[in-house]
Image (cartoon, rainbow, N blue to C red):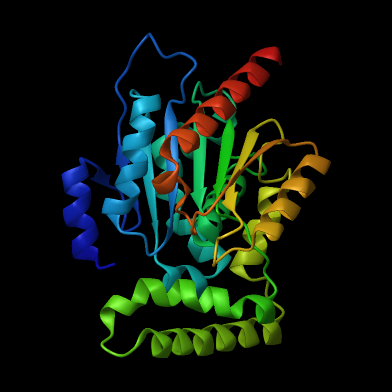
Length: 299
């Protein structure tokens, strides 16, 4: 996804560019939506085009018309080679869009009236979400990035290299194939070689992979709010992320005290659940948000 494409399409969507990956559209004040999220942050899947992510914005607008939207685009190659520190710096504009006063004065953290919904798509979106959480924690000396609900759409998957290199290289090749004239299999093979080199280098220096950090951070009370509602949206037909890995992550979240709902779709591809079953998809999100609000009011 070129910089020019993102800028052109984001202008059509009415979003303001904060960085090459972060875009924002301010919400409309209203006294009628006190239970609605004030901010919805959508972490797009790897190499997702703006026109595809825009469909999720449209769906959320139907549910929560006055919310602020923050879009995070996720170039796969950049996400993989960046260090955690570099990824975290990249996500600072997203934090500034939601709680700018906290970054200026960390003592104000926890005093905001923001109601935040995080929607994470695929492992690449999860990597950037974890980087956002890490950046906030670093800037506030240990505070948790405020969020009332975390939607995990087709994520997270296993981080074991050999069983998953075929899936990962396919995901990477899908985003890059349009740039190369040769057969898709060649692009996937090159992607597999690149991932192998990256994995080998990480193993040599003892580094935690981006995917591994994000998977752990989502269930770590140092980064994720234990009081936030968690919704997993997944399918057994997903050819990128194995459904059993998502269920294992959901079970671990439950065991650690998170309030978890899981919605299993039939016959849907990776991040394709909304496209195939829109009514059920948005109904699951609306119901989970209602539960998140009710849980917060009881506290």
